[in-house]
Each structure stands twice: as C-alpha cells, then as structure tokens.
Length: 387
Image (cartoon, rainbow, N blue to C red; front, side, top):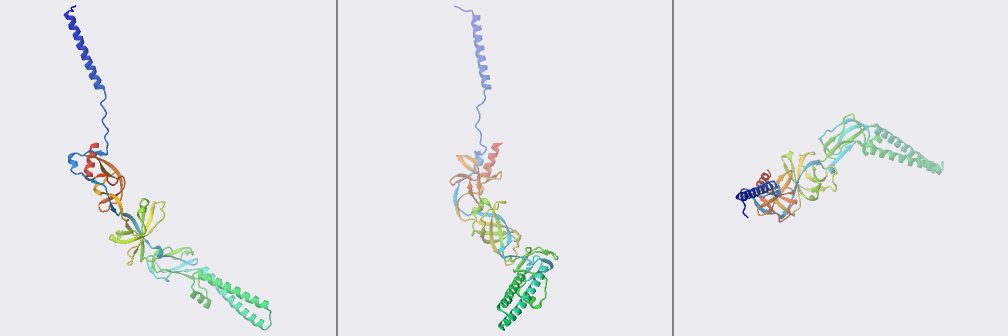
C-alpha cells in the first residue's frame, strides 16, 4: 500500500516534535533536581597552602625531667610564735599610756597605767587577812603557854590552833588573788610592810619587740579579756601564700621557694616551705603555704605584698614549646597533624611556662605530632577559610 507523501511528512513531523518535547522535559527535570550536598567543613581543621607551609615546623611531644614553678601572690605576716597580746590583769580605767604604735619596747617596760577599784579592794582584803593571821598567831602562842601552865585544856588549845590555820589559808588566798591581778612579789611585800593601798595597776610588756597594735585610748575602761597592745618580735617574719586547691598536690613542706617583694625593689629572698595546711579554705578554695625568713634590719614589714615562687620536685612530664600554643577564648590550643598536610586545632590544658616549655596536663600525650613553629600563621589561614 502506498501512502500519500503528505501523510508521510506529517508523521515524521509529529515524531520530531515528540522527541523535542521529551528532551525539554528531561532538561527541566534535571534542572529541578537538587545538587548533591557538599561534605561539611571542619572549622578546626586546616590544609595550609604552599606559602603557609613554609612557616610550619612539625615536632613530636616528648617527655623530659621537668620542675614546675608556681607563681602565687603572698603577704608578709608577723611570726605568731613571736607575738604577745598584752592586756590588763584587772578591770580599770586607763589613766596613762606610755607607748605608741610602731614603737620598739623591751620586756618588762611599762606601757600604761590604770586605776582599779578591784585591785584596791583585793589589797584591802589582803591586809585584813594579814592582820587576822597575826592575831591568830599571838592567840595560838598564848594558848600554848596557858596549856603548858595547866590553865586551859587541850580543847581550847586546839581551837586556837585551828583559827591560826584558817587565818593562814585566808592570807594565802588573798596573796594569790593579788598575783592574779598582776602584782609582783615585791609589790605585795611592799604593801604588807607599808599597809598602804594603791589602786594603780600597770600594763607591762611581756616580750621585747615592736608594738603592731594599740587598741585603747586614755580614759577608756578595760577588762582583763581585752587586748590593749600587741607586741611582735619582727626579727623573723612569715610570708604566706594561698595555693589554689587544684595545685595543692604540687607543694610539700621542705620545697624550695623564692619570695619577691615589690616594695623592696623586687628583692628576691630564698627559703623553704615550713608549713602547708592540711585543710582547704572552703571560701577561697585555697591551701595555705608558709615560709619563714630572717629580718634583721626590720625592713620587711607585716602586710607587705609579695610573690612566692615555689619550685616543684623534678618529674617526667610531657612538654610542648611555648611557640606551639595558640590562645583563644581564654583557653590553650595546639595544632596536631592528622594527615600528610592536614592539621587540627585541639584544646589542651597546660602548666606554667619554665624555660620556654609548658607541661601537658590534659589533651596530648607523648608521641603526638604537633606544629611546633608556625602555629600563628596556620591559625590565621584556618580563620580565613571559615569566612
């Protein structure tokens, strides 16, 4: 069968149009389909370009014998074993003060005078007890003579002797009371001989040293429990530091320390720790460490600020050079090698710097490959890649 040429042409045209339509649909479908997702970029990883790679030097984390030096704030204190807090032995009113703050005094020196009715009453009781004993002694002597003459019986003699014993006990009690109130043996003897009551009591230095506190003014009434003066022997002083709780295990009694005092032209003083507290201050979370230093010139004064450098015992520690450390967000970081030319920034915990290295506390181990030099340039490129 033969088809007209028109029919053949029309059929070919329809087939061509259908093919074009299919291609357009395929192109539209391809355009509408989402592109495959790109792999996420790790913001801590970096692959340096050739220019940055010139600055990068790789090294291995090594262990070495390391002595860490803790640098902690400190303060000067008076040596409490050489301090005397001086008060009044009686209740009374201050009538005279003979010493001022900062004055050097000698043991036995009178620092103040006060008037005390308590003292005068005690002296009167002593004189009464002394007179009663004298009467009882004479009565006992006369009773002994009368007993020997067979004038009185044994019962009367025993009564008189008992009265003498009681009078002696009362005198002893009154004597001890005067001692408690601060009177010396010489003063009591003078009272006994003169029979004159003196209400003045004296505040006497019990230690040679410097007055570091004076808590009274003239005319003030004081009690025996009140500390009127504090005297300290400043020939030796304490320098005390507060060690953070997490570093307390690094310090021991006997550790070598250096103390720097800024007020004395940054003078350095060598010493050893003589005390490390066995308890933690719950408010500051610190442990007290103390050294004692000689102060012959008295130029190291209590309350001066200082810096204590405590040298730890030598131990094997993994260390990294200070040039390898990247400081960001108040944390220390190190670049470790993760591939042939790939590096990753990791957070680490490091100790204090000594001789251009820092000990590793957490985050690295011996044998890890790190960027020892060029970390600054590598970190700059990492930041640029993040933008």
